[in-house]
Length: 256
Image (cartoon, rainbow, N blue to C red; front, side, top):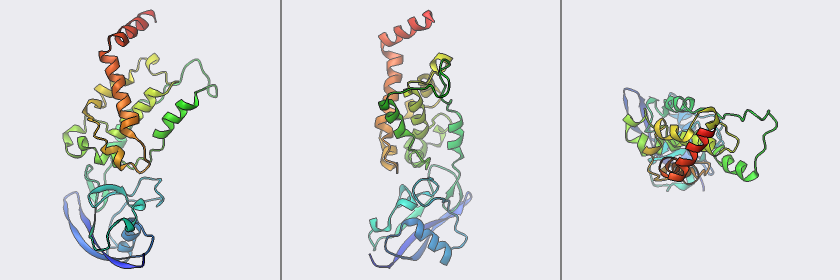
């Protein structure tokens, strides 16, 4: 692809309001959207605010919405767009705008602090943990998360209903709860912490209706819905409604 001039519409503004502004920017072969944003800063809009860091799809910093789809700008090649179309870049819609393409994602860090950490088994010392490889592989998928928060942004429970944010942790952090609940060495339940109950009652698992929109935008290809949220929902249902599971938990609690 030889160089050409592309039309862009970029959102400019702050928490008080803003607008889409039109620009024409040179595009060269092999470039990504973040390259164009940097060229725009260098040539036409030096005060354009944008968050970025690694430019390699591993830090999650340059999240934005490109033509309405949550994406990493550093991983979105210009070659996926028709030369004649106008490329629109806007900030993540689910979070408050600070300025231009930079949003306040502190909501996510607040939710992260609300997820209790791994509880080590008291009978094992560090270095004595042993797990089957299949258990390692299962949780390793979730650890690929780069915390770009694209899944949080596209989840309609958060995106379209601001009032849900207080009660709903979102797919990224429900995935974290699922990872810990699946961990064969996590001793949370033995310490009195019921991760499945907290997932439902404190982190809003019931709000999720498994539309898989979070999975569709994950740049790491994590199957958030199929491998984390649906299994977690199944565990919650078993705990609450399966009479055998319920009876077993009662017997185990009484014997302990």
